[in-house]
Length: 391
Image (cartoon, rainbow, N blue to C red):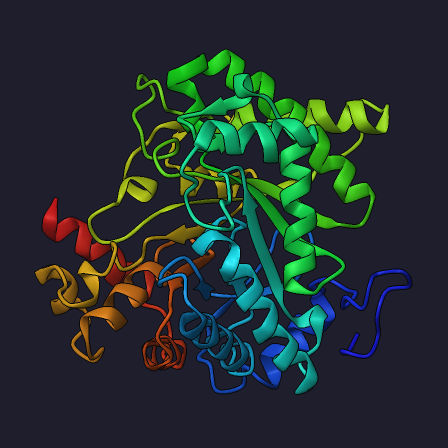
C-alpha cells in the first residue's frame, strides 16, 4: 500500500504494516545492494527485517537534530534498512515526530508502508516540555488528573506501568509516526519497578498491560508487542531484576485468553530488545533462561526456540565502540574499516540476533551502516572463534 492509500477515518495516517510480500519485494529493489544475509525472517509472518535498524535515542532536543534524524530515516529506508525504532520519551517526544517526518518523505518518494517494520516503546514519562520544576505537581495535573495512572503505579519517579498510559503512548506513537498501525510496541524497561514493588507485583502489572496491548492488536493499532530491557535478560537468575522469557510468554497467553475469552487464543508477544555488544555479551554467553524443552539457554537461544524475534541495542556502547574495538574483533575483521563498522558487523553476525539497532543523529554516520549492509555477516565459525580466543 503506497502513500496515497490511507485508512478510512485514520486522520490522514498511512495504513498498512510489514508483510512478507512487500518486504521481500523491498529486499529485491531498494535492498538490492545489500549483501546476502542482510535480511532475516520475522517469526510467524515471513516478513524480512534488515540486520541493522535505525535507532533514534541520541541527540539534543533541538530543531536541528530533528531535521537530521528525519533525513537519516528518509535515506536509510530508501537504502535497504527497513527497521526503524523509537520511543515516546526519546528526546522528550521529539524523536518519534522526527521519524514521522522522515517516513513521510520516504512514502512520498514511493517507499511502501508494508516494506517497513516500525517499532515504538512506552513506559517512561515523556516530559514534552522538558523536566518539570515540580514533578509531583506535573504528574498530578498531566497524568493522574487525566486518568492515565496513579502515583502507586509510578517507579523511580519516571516510569509508569498502567494500561491507560501505555495505550496513550501507543496512540501518540501512531500519531507522531503518521501511521495507522505499528508493527510492534514494546514496554520499555519494566524491570525498574521490581526494586519498588517486587517481582510478583511487576508481573501482575505486566499482565494487565499485555491485555491492553492485545486489545490494541484487535483494534488494528499494533501487530505485535513485547518488552525492551536493560538489565532483565542479562542478569543472573538469582538477581532481583532478572526476568524469564517463558514467564513473560505465559503472561501474554493469559492476557490473550482474557481479552479474546478463549483459552486457545494465540498471543501476540513476539519481540524483545536488550543491550548487546562486544563488552555486553550476556545475551549470547550467559545461560540464564529455560525454554520448557528441558534445556538452559541464553536469551538469544531461548528466543530462537520460542519464536521470539530479538533486537540488540547499544551496539556502539554509548559511542565507545565507535572509536575502538577489542583486539580480537579487530583481528577477526581485517577487511572491515573503522571501529563503528566493526561493532555493527560484530552484532549483526551474532547467531540469534535478528536486528542490531544503531542510534544515529548525524547523517554522516549513516554511511557506516550502509557500508556494513553491503558486506555479508561473518560466518558462524569465524564468529564463534572470537569467543574461543578470549575464553
